[in-house]
Image 1 (cartoon, rainbow, N blue to C red):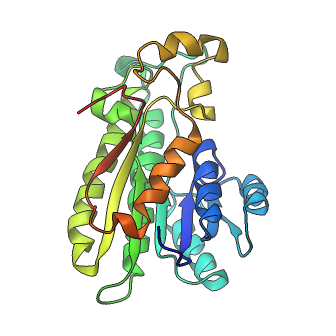
Image 2 (tube, one colour):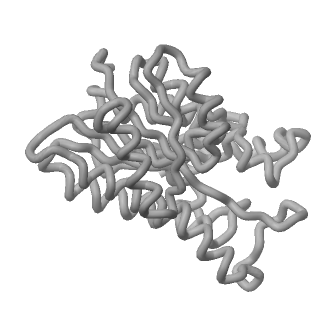
Image 3 (cartoon, helix red, strand yellow):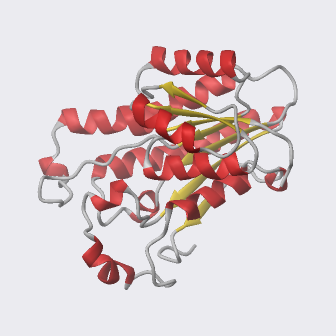
Length: 254
């Protein structure tokens, strides 16, 4: 990996996977902007990061003006971000922890999921791309999709599956558009990961049963996802773009 210090803006940086990504990239020596709707929690994450020069910024990825403001604040404090990790996302369950079927999904819940997961990723990536300098330069975009986008999902609802599938297509489109500037765009598709989103529907007591269908025999950790992200922003991944790294313990093999 390169020893060069980069400026990384991580959306959803206060969440379980997002926070792990921030920690991993900070440990690599990069400056981190922890971007999240929950500014208090984002500040807690930023303070815990290794090294100095990290900040927390308010960012609602579904709000265009909020996205622009977060990039402005990051650029003013740290410099223009040359790494974007689009990790913000939500997953809706019924009160009993079951996934709502399509026939049970209200339009408002569908739209909220799409606004945050899909449109939020688009707005974040678009703002990053708009701020790139002319010509070739270092740049990395890593989007966070999901194994549910590839399998149709078992624990996830249709809105989440559709939004995460759209991220895979957006990542490929961006990879092709930004290739001439030597900016790479890749996705990471986590499987079952021990993070707050999973715990909405899976109690720790059921981990062994859930792990039975995973060849490596365990539920993944946020750090497993963070390791994949760290690789994708490294110089070692400079010839990799438009791809998806599966982090699922063999749950889906292609």
